[in-house]
Amino acid sequence: MITTGILSKVEVNSSNKEIVHGFKWAKLQALEYVRFGDPVGAWYEAALPERDAFCMRDTAHQSTGAQILGLQVHTKNMLKKFAANISESRDWCSYWEINKDDLPAPVDYKSDEIFWYNLPANFDVLDCCYRQYLWTGDEDYIQDSIFLNFYKRTVEEYVKSWDINNDGIMEHKGECPYRGIPSYLEFQVGEYGILAASDQIAAQYAGYHAYSKIQSLRNNFLEANEYEKKAKVMKRIYNSLWWSKRDKNFYTFILENGNFFGTSLKDAWKNPNVVTPMPLYFNLPERGLKTECAIKVLLECRNINVETKSHYPEVLYKYGYKEQAFEVLKELMSPLLKRREYPEVSFSVVGSIITGMMGVNPDATRKVIETTPRLTDEVDWITIDNIPVFENEISLRYNKNKEAVLRNISGDTLYWKAAFENDVQELIVDDIKVKTKKEIKIDGLKYSYVEIPVGRGEEHVIKTI
Image (cartoon, rainbow, N blue to C red; front, side, top):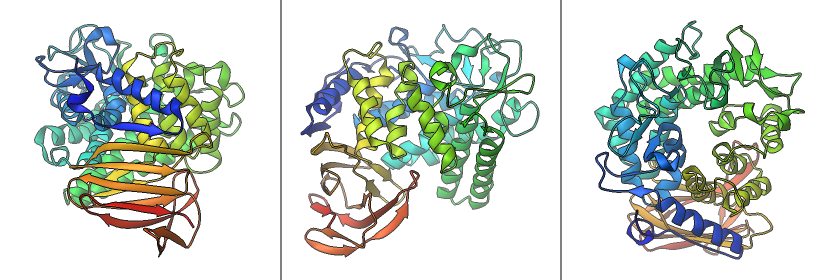
């Protein structure tokens, strides 16, 4: 256990006290799970709390919140443990869950033939490693031999080992029902004959895309191009074969008999066990009707477990549903929420406020910090101080969605890409009108932005006219 002063200086203030109190709770709760001095090294709990362990899925999802709380060293150590334990004897799986003693958690692992493993995990961790590089600029994520071996084994041998019908999609195999579960939706283990799952395709797509980006950074452009093409194939397969025009929803599973299985938009509220936000989380559905329907399915299933619901705010913010995102965020922060103590909830609240509500999107490859205000009418202003990014700390303030103020508290010059949800020709930068550039984001809306350098100790104000 640690105190907040050791690792995390990030602070929130706002006209909306629900955010202030909620963030304070999430920060303190998350830091309660941080550990030092165990054989495994620096780590934080990312599993059921009583297990003294961290699993691949939770670690990948908690990593952004952990970054904001100053836990970069912990996250890197945990990700490297997963990378180091990839093994041919386990069909290129790692250990799903590692405990404080630097061992596979006994509840999940008996032998290399009998162990719990969710197939999206390798690709989820690969995608997470790339995101950590974008946040930190830590070259180990694109240069360290242990990470590079994990990435390459994942996109090559791991896929070959689990793609039993050579269609490019990984499937469940073998007699042990939980050795290679094709989904993060674990209710179906031993209940349904599920062969492949939508969240596995989504993770595989994201993993290929991340691997392509990593290889591009390493100047391996032929390999980068190869895996970007593989990512596009996964996206095409999902948006064609896995879409049900009749149900107005994507299927969740393919069964062993070859049939698709899922729920319709109309009946989604009755079937929360087959609803997953992961395709949206990994940017897999194509823009337009299919994305809109997928979002509506999530919104129909608010009576879902906290692990799944913890993904909702960041997904909803990303796709432009800021009012709905804020409502779910308030649910996650509420003392009335059952199992609010699950580590993923508090870490996700921290991450969702920064990346979702504040729209902070760093890119270490260019040392650019993109910001996009996504406040609702309930929030007049909000300030986040001491956000760690790259080797810098920044503060960021929004007044409504019309004015942004960024200060580079420490670290070398960075570049601020300030985006606003409107189509305007000019923005005001420190009282001077500047011509904007335009882009359409994943939510399908057009944004106007400017990009300016921000030196150490400098503060700049950018607002709409």
